[in-house]
Image (cartoon, rainbow, N blue to C red; front, side, top):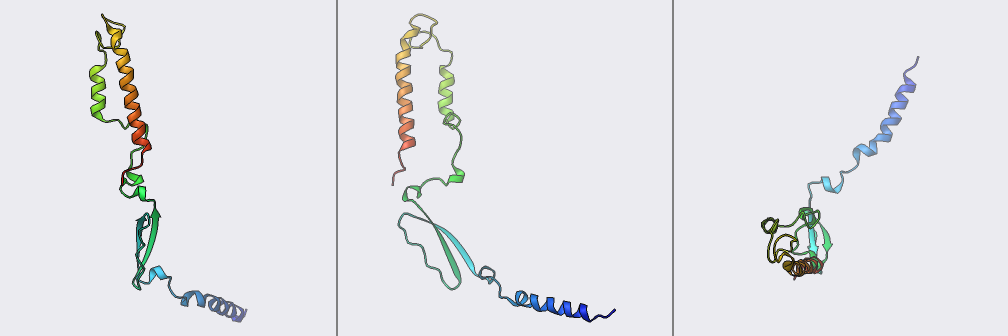
Length: 136
């Protein structure tokens, strides 16, 4: 059997692969530096130089001084409630008597209206804090 067909096939394969072997490297592999910057509002994006490529991500002005999304707390508002507020709730738990809003003891019913008012005020403050954008 002759080796000529195998040599011809290998020469054709090598000739087909030659442009891929000689092709220049991509731009990011040529020792260039890439900077990724977040720009807020109408701030200008820095210009790229010969040594550095600058990529800008534009976000609204309201996000400038906020905690980044990946660090923000998640979950319900109850799970994010401070320990100081939880301790106050534990102190008043099981309280009976005057101004306690409890069916136990004399005058226990007297605190129910005040408790409803305090709860409504607290909910309004939480809604206002959650709906308002951060101050600039």
